Length: 328
Image (cartoon, rainbow, N blue to C red; front, side):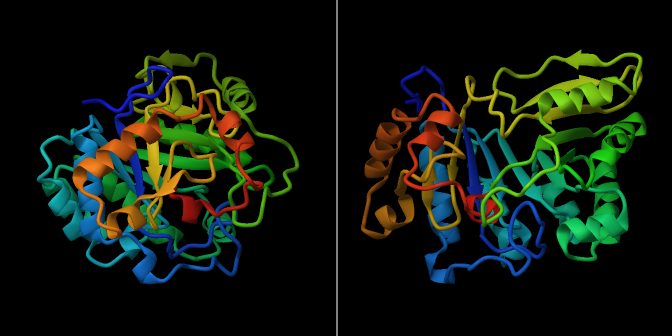
């Protein structure tokens, strides 16, 4: 049995938020004072998460990305990863993290055969990094970057391109791929910072970012990517690594979408831009069987909107959540 929407897209990828809590306060993600975090009892338990993933894996979901908030903020997260590693239907378990808390766990992550780590790092300058994240942890995060690069884990760097803050560092990030076997990914800024869209001096979308990079190099090669890849990828000739651009806000990646999301409180989202379809946590706590879950997942995915614009138009309210609440 395979989860498929009415457009024929096979759903094989779950993004699951472990927690809404985070140790940083990135300006594009949440207000400086943070967000109103939910009671711990409102969060999915690890047991509930494990069950959701197992049921979805029996419906063809074979790739899971664990996000937050910051997943390593939640106690016993590494033990949860260990339990997930026993699900033989999963081909990939990936993690998105800000890197401030994981350096002591890297060896264990290797032992558990975690596939890749997406490390969020929006500046290579300590002062600017501190301004963006509102926390002085740059040295710690960069040290994590170096340790991950030396590990057997695949390393991707996530850089949210923020007008007026870090656009002058785009080429510096591309240059990291010269000597390091990493994937640098530039992400269009999203409006989900907990209070509506930030006023931007100019819009740094996919075209502006790639044209800026091409203006600095005599040749930029296209890299063949999976059809469902969220990023369009490139390479500078003779560089070890690659770079890519994720058009998250202009939404040119929707046609081949194979993803669903579940927030830390159990809200099932067919699309990043929808308001949430149903709460799987409540469904489970009301006594749903595994077959009930499968039936609900199948019916819900069948209604997955064609793209993010349609999903956003169907909302009852403007997008004003925090990315920490939605799940990375």
